[in-house]
Structures are given as structure tokens and as C-alpha cells.
Image (cartoon, rainbow over all chains, first blue to last red; front, side, top):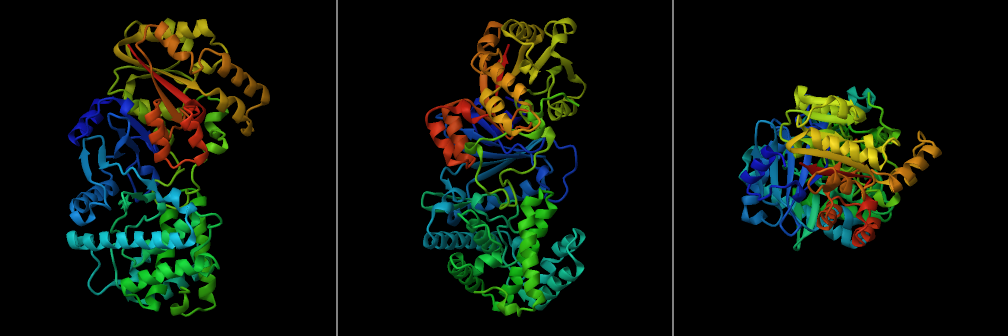
Length: 335
Length: 242
């Protein structure tokens, strides 16, 4: 096996010297990549390794990226701090970062349980609601501790201006071809929503980043952690993406909330999260718009195929139809 | 440009059990089938070799692999037709030889494959490695009909070569040993060696770990349980050291 990689894994405390102990996964870009990374483009990534122990069981998960990959460096810093906190020891896997001139590696303990992305399709609606509620409670514990342990991630005391939080995304969508009148309507709604209590969000809370193991919900992939402070961003994203993985569940978020089957449970989860966050109905409406704008722009900016971001843009168009009606901000999210 | 068969350009036709969870459009990172840069084809090479002084690629090979090798290993990479190896490369002059797609050619029967592998052994320095690929005939013979660019005759020929040819996964390790290499280590590659997303050591524990980790279709589980690992992966790569 490559001596440089071997030395880095040894430095991280892994006793492996053979490629036969290692599975190469998510191999999407050469290391080093020829271009300087820009933004959060998917092809900035390198590859991941799953390191097996002496019995052939997965023991560690390694993300391998360019040495100047800021997203991974940020995730490693956050996870190293959070995983040391005893209150989060059963939510955030222990993590360590090592680097050389050619490669940066994040080594974390492998969590062997079942991914929520596999389990979610088989849950009854009632169990889905309970699971999503538990996951959101776990995420809120993490984000609350993160704000204490890393004050730079905390939102300002007076809350966040939703229009400011989503300004870059509106600009991006405008440049990407969303009609100026639609961008204007969305911007006006966000201005109208004003400020709302802000919390650092996980930022990528979809079922593939959640594992059930040992009676706990473990969270993975903290690359976006704390970069988004739009309240309930994680809740909106988890509700939409986890319902999407259920049979017949591919619905835009607004349609999902109005759906006869999914609606009651989704609304119950979101209204509980809104109460805990201390949001008014108008602030909830503003946060909803900010989420839809941000996620559509973020996925489009990644340079991924249209299948990834089109459903989000479609959801945005549907919202814009509602806004053109016009719908009062308080009634935007049908809770 | 390489002269690879269309399977590498158009992607591999996937049987139902190969389809992953329908999660591609959900996460904002590591979300299943993200686009892959062509030069990612070379990362496994970096894992295998530290800094080869001379790397030989016996063509045809994926553009991404060659691009990676040339950039990463500078002027040490040479791409040549397999037949030139015997005539132009001196003994013990290379650290790594890649035989990616050459053995799929109808020209390579048992005798000529063994001849080629013996020359690979000859040109390698002590500690050098030969990387030889063997495609899965079930994938490229039976399942390739989904690929409109490949005609029926060519598909049947592929299937026949895959089932009875010298480069099939069951025979290649024996030929490598007969050519003088130490025992070859075997890896499964998915979805293809030309655009690999995953390399999995060919052991039961590693395949089970990969299947659990990658959240693949539950239809694959019975094949994993029965040990029919080779049916799950389109390409097999053998690493044989001197």
C-alpha cells in the first residue's frame, strides 16, 4: 500500500499496512485534483476508505481530500470538539484529522448500525413521526452544545435576518434563470419575515447521514455544520428527504404537508420543532421560504445533474404560485 | 483518445440487484450516484504504488487513468500496445505494469496471454506490481444488450471470451502464477475499471462490509449470503507482485 497513506493512517492510530484491509468508496475525484476547489462543488471531493479490523469488520471510516479542502477541515474541527463532549458521545462518532502535503484524511470511528435511509421505507407513519422527532431532538442537542463549545458558530443574540441568510441563494437562482419577478416575490417575503431566532444547523440532515446504533441516532457528515443558521432548516430537510424514501413519497415539501397521508405527521413534527425553536407563524413561513431558496440554489451550485436540483426548483415554483395568489406569510406553512 | 469498447463510455448496464437506494437527489453530499471526474479512475493506482519510476500502461486504457498517471507520475508513464512490450522494454526497468483492457482482445488466447504476462514479469523490477483486469462475462456479455452501441455479435463474442477466454477471473490468477508472480490479490471493482466508484478486496468480510455500507438493493443480499460475490461486480482487478 502507498507508504504516505500508511504513515498517515498509523499517525491516526490505525494499525493497517495492507490494502486488503481497506475498501475504497465514493471515488469521485483524483487526489490531488487539478483545479483549485471552488465553493462546494461535488468534484472537489477525493475518495473515502472503509478500514477493516483484524476480523474483517469495519472499524474506521476515512474521508480523503486535498490538503486545502476547507469543507473537510471544518468538519474535522467540529467533530473533534463535539465528539469529546460526554453528552454527545452517543451521537457524534469520535474523529481525528491527519494531513500531509498531498492529502488530508479525516479518520472517524465506524458506526455499524443501519442507515436511516434503509429503514425509513419500512416504518409505519406513526413510527416515522416518532423516529424523525427523536432525530430532530438529537440534532438540537448537538447544535445547542455546538453553540456553547464553538461560539463562532452561534447565531447573533438578536436572531438572524432571513433575507440576509438567503440573499446569496436568491442571487444565484436569478443568475441561473429563475424569472426576476419570482426572485423579487421571494425576496419581498423574506424581507417581510424579518428576523427569527437562529441556530447553527447540521445543513445536510438527510437519512443517509443518520445511523441507528446502540439505541441512539448517530449523525454523520458535518461538512455543512454551522454554515447555515436558518431556523428549522434541518427539520424541513429531514421531513422532505425521509418521506421521499418511502413508497410514493416523492413530493415537494408543500405538497407533502398538504398530503392526506403524510400531512398530519409532517405537520406535527414541524410544529413541535417550531415551538421548541420559539418561532411565530410568520417566522416559520419565512424560514420555510429561506430553506427552499437555499437548498435549490445549493444543489444547483454544486454542478450536479439536473435530476438532483430540479425537484427543489419545482417546489420553489409551486411556492411562487402560492405567493402570487397572494398567501399571507402566516398561512404559508399549513400547520 | 482511447479505443475502449463502448461499455466504458456509456456506463455499465446494471441488473436490478445492482440499483442502489433511490436517494440520489436527497443529500447535498456523498449522495449516491454523484458525477465522477474521469481522473478518479487513477486513485487506486496511487493506493497501490508510491511513486513508480516507470509505469507502463498496455493499451487500450481509460483516458482518465492515463491522465491521472501522467499528471501524478510525470514523465514516467508510457502507454503502448501490449504487443510492443516484448520488443521495446528492457528487463527489470519498470515498477508497475497495467494490463487494463488488452486481454479482452480476441487475439489473446491462453498461450499469448501467458506470453504477455511473462513479459510483464520480465520488465518489472523487484517489488514491482502487475495490475491485470478481468471483466465479468455475465455483465458484459449478457447484460450489455442494454447498451445500444454494442451489436449482438460483439456481445456474444464478449460472452464467449469471458466464459472460455484466458482473461476470465478464474484463470487469470493461475496464468499470473505460471508467469512467475507471487500469489495475486483480487479486488472487485464497481461499476467499471474505467470509471471506478469502489474497490473491494475479494474476501467475504470485505464484500459484506461494502454491501452494508453502500446501502445497496436488498436483492443483492442473497447473492452475498451465498458467496456469489463475482456476480455482483462488473470488473475484477488482480494485483500480482514480483
